[in-house]
Every structure is written in structure tokens, then in C-alpha cells.
Picture: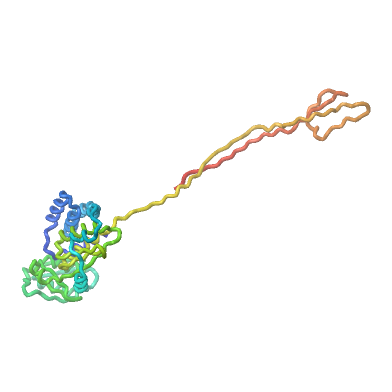
Length: 343
């Protein structure tokens, strides 16, 4: 998501007269050494947008993003009016003007990648591209076409090809309609004269404190040199008003800094299973031994009880006796249970 925002930022800034990526990088290094993480992050992001091939700019910007987002977390007065004294308050007149200063119309171009072979001076190059992409041109009266040039743009959509031609000829474009643009020389005077002004309001999300938003808004205003930046702590709103080439990238950067850092909550349920083993073995001996008298007295007949089927006899005749023997039992028992802790 952050890379997509920087790509949009590069497209919005390609026609703006800004320092080169190397100079922005040096300014960012200086701001980082001075402890201004928010300004350093913005400058690194601008350098990465101007030179996407240099990964150092991108890596340093990402490394500073958490510090830049939390730089405004120092305790301050809880009085909302005291906080707003550092930034201009948003009035009802500002909101009315913001609704009036709507963004300019968006240029509608055919989709799909093409290869463009362009030859001639600047006017001829723009005319050939306009014919290929189905839009009309109006040139500023002071715009100079420049020398003869050959430009080959391979496998590129019309919007990106238009941006490349804009940078190659030192021009900037003003969209006048869905299929009409004005081409002018890229100078501060011409931008101040021809570039449209817009105003946007940005809501502050609930997770971001008012102090953090105020610090970030001030850093964006200083870095992008925004003409008008209003702050309203009651409505939790920030207003930006300036030229479109400044407001759009400033809006993207401010919204990126406002993005709340994600938090992850993990809930674990532990299941414990026990394991135990019980083993027993041995003999079960009889617990009683009956005694029987088999002696004959007179003409009586000896009686043998049913339980005397197994036993031992002792003596004989009138002194015959017996002892019953019960069944012995050999036994073995094994009880096993297991358990383990599962996530």
C-alpha cells in the first residue's frame, strides 16, 4: 500500500520544479540527525518517488515511518483551544471555500499499453501523442517548442507516456476538460499563474490522538510548503489548500502517516492430556480351609459333603479326617492411560 502511494506521489510531482532525489536525500539525512523523524520520512519519501530505482531511499523511509507516526505523542495540554493555537483554525468560510475549490476534471484516456514513436519539436511530440491517445491540446502563448527530438516510449499506457513527455520537454500540464489539456513551460511564475488551486479536508481517524495529528500536519506543511493548513480538534479534521501539485502529494503523505499501526491479538487454548500405567499380577489364594470328619461310629455311614471333592485325607478307619482345598487363582491386570498437551 505504501509503495502504491509513493507511485501516485511520483506521478503528481513529476511536473513540479523540486530538488533532485540526491538533494532531497541529503536534506532527509540532515533532518534525521537533528531528530526530526517526521520531516526526514517525508523527504525520504519524496526522494524515493523521484528516483524509484534507488532502493536506499525507500528502505530509509520505511525504517523511519514508526518514529514519524509517533513523534507527536509527547504529553501536551488537554485544552483543545490551546493546541489549535499552533495551527490555523478551520472556519466556516474555509469549509465553504473548500467546497467551491473542487478538483479539476480528470483527463480520460484510452486504456491499454502502446508503443509510441515520436519525432519533431515539442509541439510535434505533444501533437502526435494527443492524436494517438485521443485528446486535444492548447499551448500557452509563451510556450517554446524547443529543438528537434526523437522519443520512443515502449509498452506504456497513455497517462504514463504523457508524464514522460511532460518531463522530457520541461513542461507541465493543466487539465481543462475530460479530453483537453493546456501545455505550459514549467516555471514557478507559470505554475502560480495557471495551475489550479484546490482544497481538501482530511478526517483524523479515532486511533490517532489530536497531538499526533497536529505534529504530523505541521511536518507536512513545512515539507511541502502548503500555503494554507487548518486544524480543528473538535471536528478532528485537517484542511489543505494550495496548488494541486502540492496538495495531492501532501494529502497522500499525511494519510499514510495517519494510518494506525496494526496490532495482533493471539488467543491460545491449552489442552492437557495425562498418561499413567498401572500393572498388577500374582496369585489369589483361598481364604478358608473346611475340616471334615470321615470317622465311622458304630454302624453309621460316613458322609462326604459336596465341598470335600478336593482336599487332603489324614488317618484311617475311625480317625479319618479331611481338609478341603479351594481353587487358587493366577491373575494379572494392566491399566494404561495417556495424555499430552495440545495447542
